[in-house]
Image (cartoon, rainbow, N blue to C red):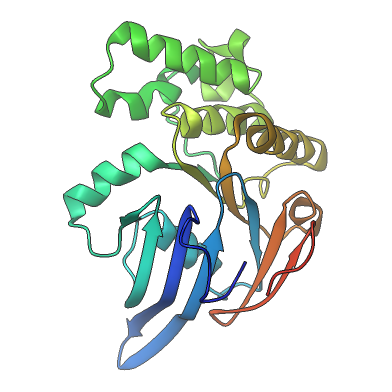
Length: 240
């Protein structure tokens, strides 16, 4: 739902969000007065032309950037005024990132790539192994643990990236064009996997895409136009 009177129980609440950038003497409004509520288990897609503010919004929700004005609250934590170190800690605990280009480290195996986020935790080696093996099994790559990225297809690389994103059981997943570099068959498989994470594991997913076929898989599609939410459509009804 996209209005300023959202439920206080929403997992993610965005209120009056503005983001401005300075380009020389010019001030660019990237996001303007954005309000948004996302419930636990929602699968929300953001669409809009290039430059409409979609990726900026994901970066703000993930604590990678700070707004010029407004607030973002996730599971009761107001993140907009956290210190950098607190934000890093919060991000490691709550956010799983999935990008278009996978961002795997080529000299590390699938297992080692997925284990990376856990190296920042206090888990023992045996506990880390259990988490990594579970995550790789969820994405269907239990038999590829010792493969390097160059030995995997693009779809398999993205599965490794998804395993890395879910290995620490984050509160929500942020996906920036996760199928943008894949052929249709691989894209459909990745979307099937993300739908399964929502349906079976009750993950909350926020995704940017240009692909209307990808958007159809979400519970709700929100449209951004020049930094403003202009329209929303939902499978189970409407929200605007």
